Length: 341
Image (cartoon, rainbow, N blue to C red; front, top):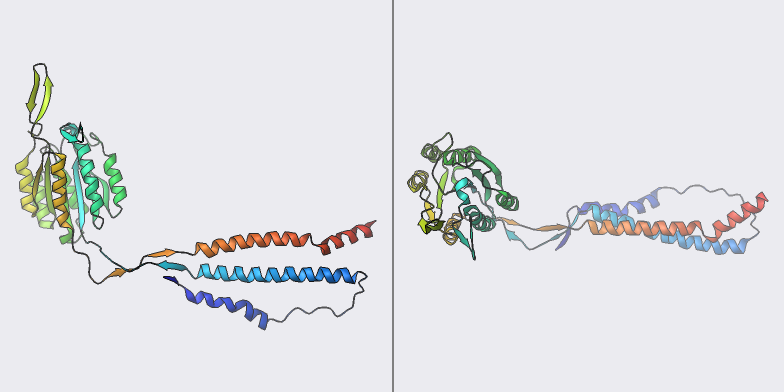
């Protein structure tokens, strides 16, 4: 539906008429003038009157177009329910040295763990459009890669730019939890969630994971922990291929305790497919939308009358130039030349 947001501006359309009615015209001299080329002047005057009519019409249309643009015309779409979410969801991703282990199969090739995580998390971020989400990366230290935001494109972009070794080679799980607590300390209690993904044990940092989890429980931060990594992989050696457990360092007991203390859950993903399933389960965190609220999507249209006004003013400039080379002007220039000679 088309409408004006400031329709009262259109009342100014009558201002030129009021000026015409109320302002007295300028007084002209009553003295007579003998014109030897009256017939030519009469023809020229008719042309000038036509030009004056065109000018008046153009100015009136310009005035109406400018008023239409100033009245803020908009196109309103169909009413849509407002589905906002009060949830703050922070993602904490391990980028320690062990994340470069290539034990994840993606299609027909083996990729490192961080690459697999990026593929899965991009889909997870895209689905949770109504949550404020942030990103913490941790290794020797934990740091905020993206603060809580609704701009999920920026969040996904920063996630994809993460590289192994940016923050060292060790794993500071406790510091990652502590940083999440600091960033969400003033948020509503029911809305705070941390999804922490790691493939190892806490080997760095100033805070132990369980101590950080105890504080998180007090402040109402629910933590979902994910242990990631295959249970076995083939490694080539001098004596041939042998099977090893690349996830031997994963501290599942601590991750389970962290989840239990904060009211969350612990998940174990041994492949990209399992990680996808886990994040689909986490989608159950999606809150119910606010009821009774609707939003009317609007699209501004002011640039259409404004653009037409610009084109029309350019057309008027061309007409004005043509008026300068009208027969009357040419006659005046010829008369001046004869007087000089």
